[in-house]
Image 1 (spheres, rainbow, N blue to C red):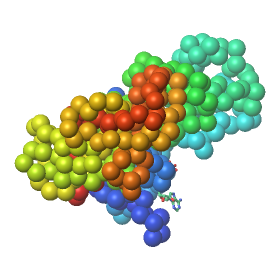
Image 2 (tube, helix red, strand yellow):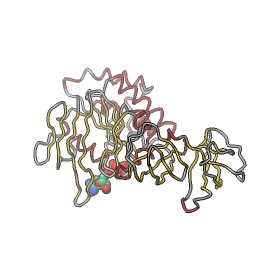
Image 3 (cartoon, protein in one colour):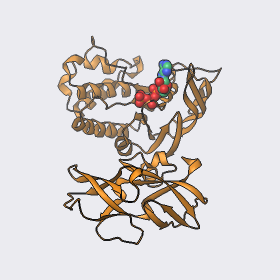
Image 4 (spheres, helix red, strand yellow):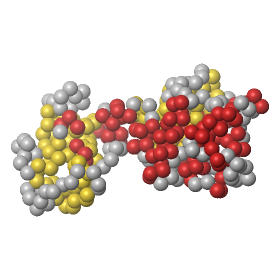
Amino acid sequence: MSINLRHISHSFGSQRALNDVNLDIKAGELIALLGPSGCGKTTLLRLIAGLEQVQHGEISIHGEIVGQGQGVHRAPEQRGIGLMFQEYALFPHMTVGQNIAYGLTKNQQHRRVWIQDMMGQLGMQNMIDRYPHTLSGGQQQRVALLRALAPEPKTILLDEPFSALDEHLRQQVREETLDILKQTKTAAIMVTHDPEEAMFLADRIAVMSDGDIKQCASPEQVYNQPENAFVASLFGPSNQVKGNYQAGKLDCVFGQFELENSDLSEGDVDVVVRARDCLLQLEPLDETSPGVEVVSVHPMGNETHIRVRLNKQPDLGIIHVRIMGHWGGDPKANWKLHINPQRCYCFAQSQT
Ligand code: ATP
């Protein structure tokens, strides 16, 4: 079941929530809508679900228009989509079994066997007659997922499905959800503000900011070939500075670099370097490596986060460096900052 969004714009009073969004979702695909709070993720999901009426643009499901500005509006239950929204809590007066079977039609009663199977697969076979308030948060989340999947929707919409769970449980329920979606060949559109979660679960990530999709591509492409500074700086701590690009060379406070195969146009550029792509060395690897003062060192388990300041650029602020493992260096030594030019993301200033 493909879903196509064309020129979707949406406002709440004078507040513009979505601005000409276009997105094509293929059958069976797992898409994450990733972006900061308020960028329009939930509004987009609610429009696809039919919980919000389209103001401008068009939404089609499997080639058929289900929502159109000033026109068609199919009710949520006519769209063949499963919903697992945060506000769609379980019904407190129904047992787990009744909750999950709630959306089944007369013709779908055979799905009760599937429900039993899935409860077993999730280690919850003895909980079918319990009431939601007697379950843990993770168990309630699994029940909500099964309830959304029981009527066999081709696509399911998930709004921050794991946000209420603690870190350990979140990873476990994420994996279970991914396995169930793949096993049942259900496509999913999932809202998250957690880049790691999007990378882990999605076939493609639609990165959103200010009511717009800034890039939609595979996790690998979004990470390794970001199309703008916003996307480049989304994955972990990063450093953004101004630079200039002329005749194949980038000149910025981190040094001068030859950029291979760059299709950048000459002029002022924004440069993003992730903290994980920065190195501290005692000896300069080239004559332009800038000297830095170490401001503070933060062991983070398997990594060390080091905050530094460029010696010749006191006004630039803090530069973040992340190195693997333990850092045993002397903070008072004469460190040089080294950056791999291939991990230096540059964008014409109009692109950012
Ligand atoms: P979050 O991650 O915090 O849930 P989001 O990316 O899902 O955020 P939306 O909830 O879609 O963002 O909101 C987009 C914008 O629209 C925000 O500025 C929000 O304040 C506004 N908005 C959303 N729903 C309404 C509403 N019912 N009435 C007024 N403004 C709204």
